[in-house]
Image 1: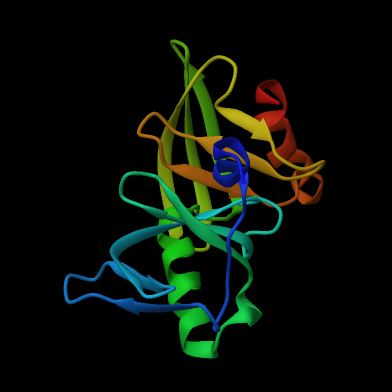
Image 2: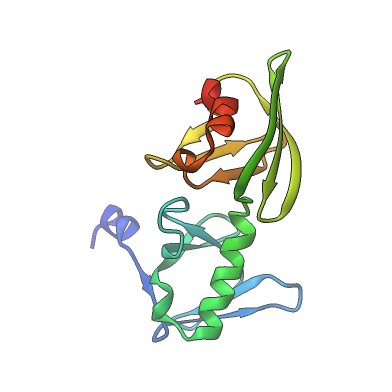
Length: 168
């Protein structure tokens, strides 16, 4: 196998060749084909449309160890560990109701009811802060890099839609 082909080869992880555990410090560790990796990160290949499939397991140096095709490739406890890691990495409260959006001096100030409670956040004006990630799903990034999701903007009330129409 050439060096390029070896670098491009995908290693799939499942219960037959990998085992995950939490370290004493709360990091996710993996043993793969007899090699220990004491701190790994879980990245989703499709974080906004299919978060739990094709998970890239990477070292601190961002070197990919392998891909988990689906959570069902592992026992329930391991799948739960991976889900917890995804929830931390891709924490994005879901906006259930927009209460107020006000624009001033190139910023918009938002107040929303989310699945984590009522939040207030600020969004910088300009392109890229509010993205349509599926035909109906909006991803909003505030000035601190926090992300919020509106799962279906077409389900918003007319009043709520008018609040964000300018930003889409």
